[in-house]
Length: 102
Image (tube, rainbow, N blue to C red; front, side, top):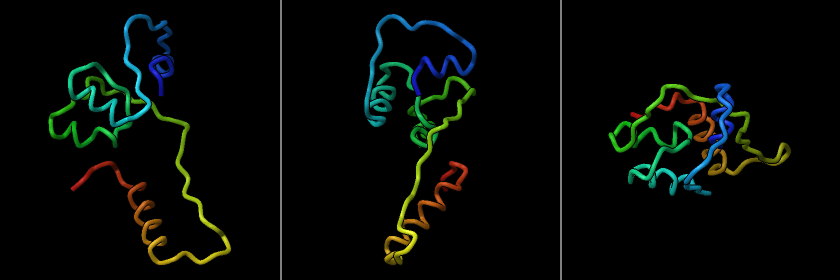
């Protein structure tokens, strides 16, 4: 998600000019936001703990869905080792969650 695509999803077409920081790593992006370097676009799950702890604030309630997805692949013919099956089951359970943590 880029700022341009985020703005366009709200039908706000404005060229972005001026100074900006760019990161290729979400951990660096979030760390910069925590340090007060600016506003960050990131997935809810990546920032939810820091928001809950008061380290970050979500300034807008608007959100944008993504057409991107993650896929979990394994052989259709081979048996999964128990540890792989356990990881697969955990990943699937986590992906069905609502983002809330105990």
